[in-house]
Length: 425
Image 1: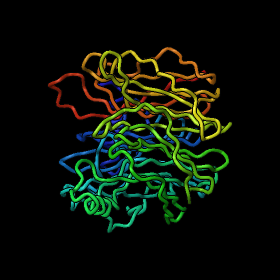
Image 2 (image 1 turned 135 degrees about the vertical axis):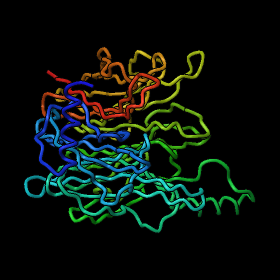
Image 3 (image 1 turned 30 degrees about the vertical axis):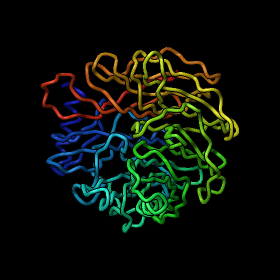
């Protein structure tokens, strides 16, 4: 264990005893004795919020830690959900956090999902939310972001905030699955097999927690995470993996010019034509820069003698047409789970995981404003590293977080959240 890691665990122990602790230089975040997974990051200037799931003795909880120096140091983690065990830990369904508002109106909003163990007919997967107005020290009691009576699968949530302080949540929802299955069975005489129908929804969350939701699209891929972004004009963009005719699992996005109340018809990002009767479990990432250019990164399959996964990147200046997809260079044949953020020079940065030799690692690559890729960099060390997230933290730094496990197969150490700051100048 490194000195920094030990310092973080000591601070956590002090917090557990009810004593105060000053932030310490942070290379990792963890709840001692728990399996720490599924991180997410959000930033507002040099203020950074990190959330993740910690599972111990079968109970999963969401934790948050705050940084005021761009991710150099973090406060002692605090539990977000008020009811112990009221969370889930699934790789494509990480908890999400956003910082919105300013001054005395600044607040943290966290959303997370929890999966029910019931059958497909009785399951009631839920998406929960809590907010903080005191810098993450306390949170409101958890509440649903949807009608609690809904059955079916839901989750794969994403979260962002606009310049006006409005918080936008996007998630997949199977509330109408039973109805659609019944209609299909009536028309064909047989119950359809495979994944139940799923739709993608948007919700605008007000400062008092009130939610106004809208349907974005139906017939979406069942188990890939969503992505959401807002540009400087307030246009909302949602991205997801769609099921096109022939069970083609390609990436789509849609925009809303009225704050998310209605969305325009979807746009197919690229005709990759990934035919799959199942879910890739690898959703897109989207961001919009100050000029209004949309940046999207995603994973798909290419045939190079045999099918293999690859990462691609594209941009759009009008929200209707996209540049030709550009393949993201990587050092392995199985890259996946790309997440992107914008850089101060008008370009982008993409973090992803890959598996060159049986041990997954986290890598990172910059994209210039002209769309040129720089040399990929490996961020993780001698560890099993997966599902990275990346943000810009301040003007001159990027911050990447991922789930880290010991590379020793027999190790009994629980996983932690590893952090890496990358100077951009």
